[in-house]
Amino acid sequence: MQCEICGAEIRDKPSKVMIEGSELDACPRCAQYGTSTNKRKPVSRKIAPVAQQPSAKKSRPRPARPDPLADIKEELVEDYNNIIRDSREKLNWTQEELALKIKEKESLIKKIERGDIVPEDSVLKKIERALDVTLTERVGEDDWSGDNFSRGTTLGDIVKIKRK
Ligand SMILES: [Zn+2]
Image 1 (cartoon, rainbow, N blue to C red):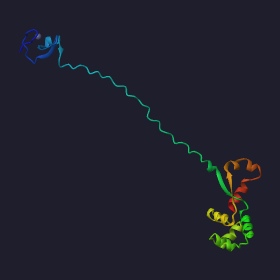
Image 2 (cartoon, rainbow, N blue to C red; image 1 turned 90 degrees about the horizontal axis):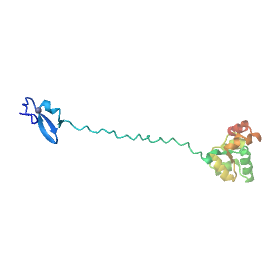
Image 3 (cartoon, rainbow, N blue to C red; image 1 turned 90 degrees about the vertical axis):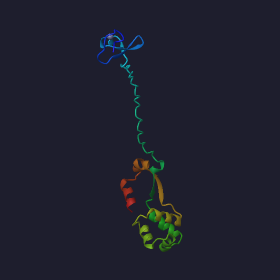
Image 4 (cartoon, rainbow, N blue to C red; image 1 turned 45 degrees about the horizontal axis):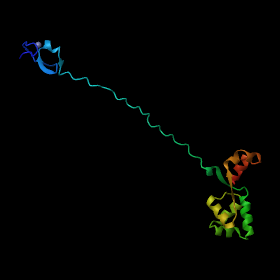
């Protein structure tokens, strides 16, 4: 076939080139003057800016909100055993009667009144209800740290109370 531009015989494959809007078969020599149709337009490779979103901030574990009630403890009053005995005697109840009222053993009442053991909360509540007394006092944590100590309460006292 012939070169459509210069008319020269093309032995190999003609190069398709664009010359002024026309696609022509051209010899290798002429081909360099035209625009190869095989040439692909360079694809614009705009790199879309990848929005580097700062990864969602990991929410920090919130410090547990202090429970206002957490600071308040119910402490068994120091002379709970005397209060129990006095209240019981005022009602003219024997230890056995009190034990029956709260469905506990008489021996338990004896130990509690002697201060040998600290009654469990459940027992304590039953005694409080039965005798209509209050054996605990609400104590704020803060009270332990400062003033109470200077007012005469020592750590030893507190330990003693708890050990009774
Ligand atoms: Zn040619």
